[in-house]
Image (cartoon, rainbow, N blue to C red):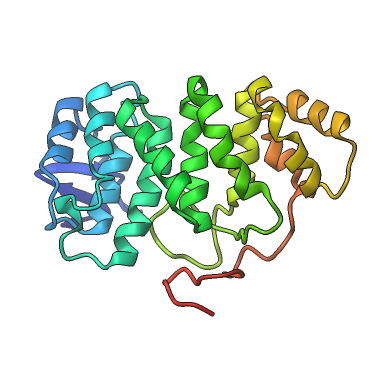
Length: 254
């Protein structure tokens, strides 16, 4: 139920007041949010589920909340009862990306690896590549799974992994390759073997120069741009306001 711009979930005020409201909803406690996650079922709308995920953001170091939210990635979880397959897939991709800001756990790594192995759509790959940065110690295992999506034959497209909604034009556009390159940047030296593929994307640019750019673009202080943003010339430029390649976002084929 939504009241005055605030989601009311399990009796908790989650979200922010609507414009014109004078009251401010205080953040729910960690224990209350953990209960909201573990009690989640098919009666909750995607909007309510999204509000719960967002409400958990003040507790990124909470191992309990991270593990509970990771449980929502299970395809047969009760929260997906009554949801369309497209809706469930969109929410799972959004959640996978969102979990990259929470405490890492082995179960989350399992989902990241699984998506990179078996998914193909840019939305799922971008989400998995983004959260892969939470596992630098697994770089040697993840890099071979990321590399195939750098090849020119992969049909990449603009997506938004910050929301489960299919909004066009896209508000926060990214691509699978953007997220993969940023992850290789985060992995640093272990990603050296991927330079050949980055060279291919760059259209024959000098490998040594490309590697220097990769290392020098390590994101530092807040406000610095990521490698993908600073060197977007390595990637094809298209209009992010529409779905361009392969399978449409609604599941149909062009």
